[in-house]
Image (tube, rainbow, N blue to C red; front, side, top):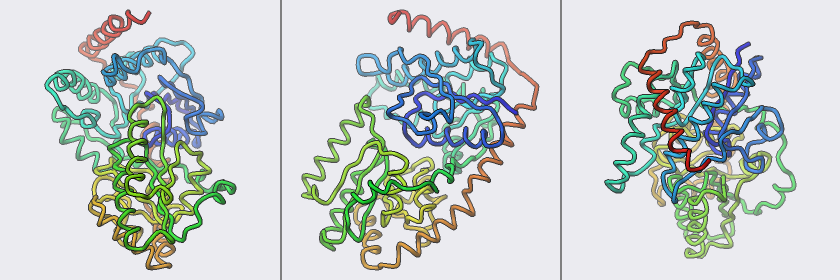
Length: 426
């Protein structure tokens, strides 16, 4: 048995959170001991496994600020994760052999003091997720970017979520040419997808022959407006009697962008005169998600250059064809013309693909069955579990510990910075 500790910045609802939870479930299914330490966990906004006690979760450092004067989100996230790492290393109640951390690598130097093996799961380089719109922003991000690259290279094992991300990793972290990231597709526990749907919820869904569905967090980078504009073109061609669009996604009232983008999408729908034909849902349950994917004619997956995208996998497993942007992870998951369609991320292309389902009643069944078969063959939970367990067990058996003086110096420097920055909040 290997004791594995998962260190995650915010254990809410999202693809990254789903990936680490499924990794923990996979390890637990093989008899390994798992637990989570996170800087934030809200029982009203989280996945069921962290709410019902299936996975042990300890929340530390949530008193630290998430932002300063409406800015410095990244710096605050780094501080919160480093604080959580300090708790992990020095708390006598936390025992582990391997640490699985993701999203923020700045905590790795601290974790190395524990002499445990460190796995870093790179969903996507953080430095590429923020635009540098000003000189001051560039100046602010420069040391954080350097820290991300340097500390990522300290992990004993680096995992990435797709071959697409592996390529981006190599192109972005120029100094880490010696690091060979391993691709571990973030496959969910399909046993959960086999559970019953929410029958009452299903009955309340619109009774249109073609129900198109978008599932994404309410963030601008998810490009949900593309689904709305493509749907408008579909309505112009086929009218409203046969079609309806549901926009469902993770929503956190604390996140300004969630609130702003949700309002922007509502305004867009109103402006296009589609209010009666578009339904918005926020932060739905797992059973409701299964209802949506089971009932939907097709999933509209609109993000460009998405790192992987777990929702298309879930949709195909539930025999819901996928229409996705032809870039990033979907190129590895969706078979164009066989399990769905890969389109240029423009409204007319998406609308053309959607129109195929309106005019061909048997298309959903045909592509849906092929999609489920593809998932079973290429993205099975069994395969995911065996690969992850092999990585964890091999690391745990390696008893070598190579902590160089420069790593210790880095840790001391990081701890000093934390103390200085946190003094105003004591």
